[in-house]
Amino acid sequence: MIIELKNISKSYKKKLALAPVDLTFNEGECIVLCGGNGAGKSTMIKMLTGIEKPSTGKVIFHSKHKKAFAYMPDQMNFPPEFTPIEILNYYGKFLDAKKEHIDHVLKEVGLWEKRNVRVGGFSKGMSQRLNLAQCLLADTDIYILDEPTNGLDPYWVIQFKEVIQQLKQQKKTVIVSSHIMRDAIEIADKVMILFNGKVKSYGTLDCIYKEHQCESLEEVFLSVHQSEQSTV
Ligand SMILES: Nc1ncnc2c1ncn2[C@@H]1O[C@H](COP(=O)(O)OP(=O)(O)OP(=O)(O)O)[C@@H](O)[C@H]1O
Figure (cartoon, rainbow, N blue to C red):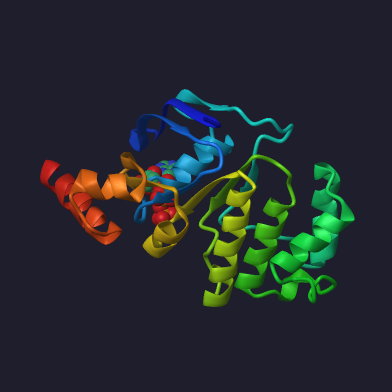
């Protein structure tokens, strides 16, 4: 195992955003955090990344790298007067990234041709790809990506999935939050279903389908929704 969550929970005043949970993430797996609006995906990411302190419990990383994880926030506001190459060179200094790696990452996210263009004129999708690039720059065991496909057009969603497959082949652990079920089905080794701040299921799709006696993630969501409604 590479990450352990021990009795992690988060409350904002009286609002329970994430109910206490114990679970582990394994090396080389892609885990997709799935759930609707307000389900607790971002809260889980904030607990994992340490952006916010949990109300209870702790997260333990077993990464071999000095930098335990790389992080792609759901949105990143880069300084508009800078170019992708300037921004990545800046991040690269902190990460000891070599020039060849920076160039490779720029090509991977399709911004090589735009490397000297000021990012102030970038579309949402281009900014999101630069956001992905800054995350991929780090050489680490764990990549945590918050809604990475937001703003990407279909071509770049496909390319993004390719990047995830490559990370998995390198035995990296990838944690992705998404409300798009197709993303989960295509890239996940394991899916975490969140609803109302609770982890309702965590495992392979086959296990989740068996557990809920369903044949698709849509059905699982409906079943979780209905069972939660009936307990209110
Ligand atoms: N800073 C905060 N203060 C108060 N409540 C919060 C705060 N952050 C999150 N919450 C609440 O915690 C719950 C979980 O929110 P979270 O942002 O984790 O959901 P999410 O699954 O990421 O949703 P979305 O897909 O809409 O971004 C929601 O009810 C939300 O209103």
